[in-house]
Amino acid sequence: MSLTARDLMESDVKTVSPDDDVAAVFKRFARYAFSGFPVVDDDERVVGIITESDLVDLFEPEDETLWIPIGLPPFVDTLSYQVKRPWADLDLGVDMIRNADRPVSDVMSADVATVTPDAPVDDVLDLLVGDDPDINRVPVVDDDGRIVGIIARQDVIRAFRDRRLE
Image (cartoon, rainbow, N blue to C red; front, top):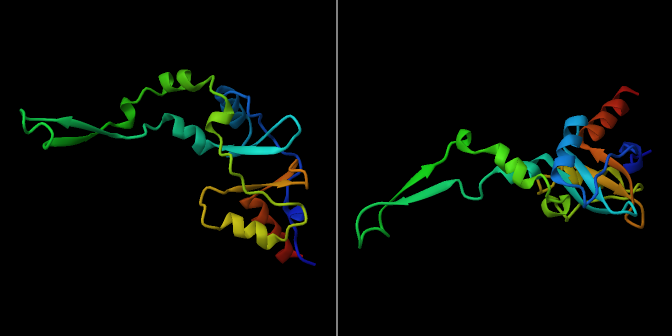
């Protein structure tokens, strides 16, 4: 008998709403030992996923490089030094306040890889070890796109370990 997503999934899924704010999601990350949550609408349909790395991106400057022109005209445009700001100089408190009220829909990934409960384990493995290194969990959805479970990498490893012990 081969494994399916149903055999691997955890059915007690912690989710967030696209209207939840970033501060609420930070609290959920602190409360639960998960590195990501499916984002579901009022009908429990998966509309996105938010991960710790999505939130970390709020605090990383888009360009860590500060270009300082030196010299006098006409050389101002041609000579410059590259200065990297140390992370210690970034004011994460200010960034947190600035982003605390942002809705999850602004920072979530909307392109979510999902499987159905009857999907073979190979489909799950293909997603978890595929070209996208950011896929660490796969929401399991019914035919209407409603969440019914979630599969994390450790769920797959645990299932294979348990099969070997049988």
